[in-house]
Length: 158
Image (cartoon, rainbow, N blue to C red; front, side, top):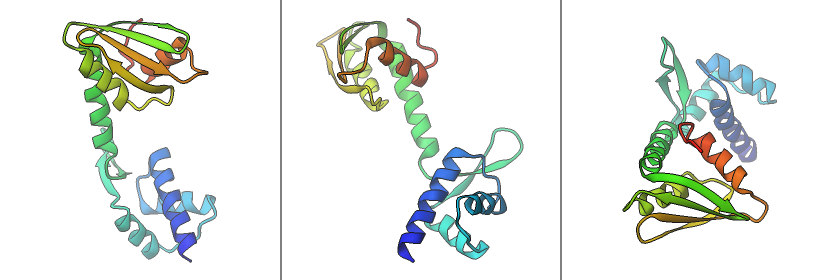
């Protein structure tokens, strides 16, 4: 029973992150496709337990949202802005990338890269003033790193 509930809670989280869920009926339909048969009352308790809320979809409707989703997106946006404000260029050799920054911006640019949490990055070292060294995983190229950075920060230019 507990295992089934934990699996159902995990499925609810995944569905809310993956789809635009506008109602409990809509969510019940998705859960049934995943093999979960639950009552409306049980689903209501699950949503309360997960602290699921409804947020504006930006048009004229509302969708379910997990706590922290908006905060995380807002925080990522802040780091992206810090990065864009400070970086000049990105270059690389093998699994080491070097980000040139404006004077005094190396710490904020390194912090931004660290907090964007890219799987390709093992870690960063901020130089004293205007350089950030980024150690990439062994099988990751500079092109891969740049592509991931552009995915997180669409405004990033080569």
